[in-house]
Length: 223
Image (tube, rainbow, N blue to C red; front, side, top):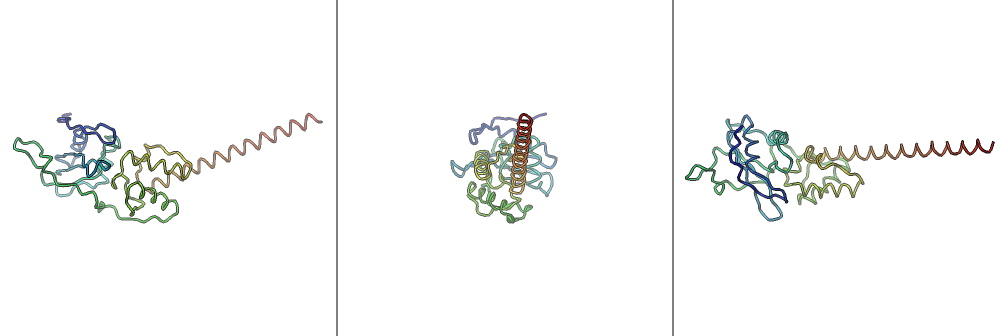
């Protein structure tokens, strides 16, 4: 497979990333003709990957479909936070992509394919509140993607730490990248809490059985 030049290396939250690897993965999508990925840095504290796409037809792939496509090929930290479809990539006089001429990324708009759904349960609201605090976004829907809203691996760690402190459960970080919505995190927390209750119930049963066996042994000795 011809991957092109992998010489645009950036450092994102302590991780070195080859932008060319992301571009090559996007290039394997059947509807994408060309792609360029940049590191967008509105501030030193806010750095995100952003992808520009040129598609083969008028209908660009949906953002959710693109992310699912990339998750099968790349680790979570290499998934862009946003995508923009262009008629063509700007070129320099030498025919290379002119990254300085690319439009400014717009990460403030919600994906039109994803409607806002407000939290309805206490658990959904509590986790949405954690997201709001970590991401600095007051309008968190239960089906919003954490990484669509500007999340990254460090913010994911902060979020999981807050969940651990609040509920006393330890969730695998990999699950965050595979299921990055409030609804899916509610499901993960519920499963962890249920497992913890089952463990406590099993331990209590074992202790009761041990106590009964000790009482029986003592009773037999007295007889």
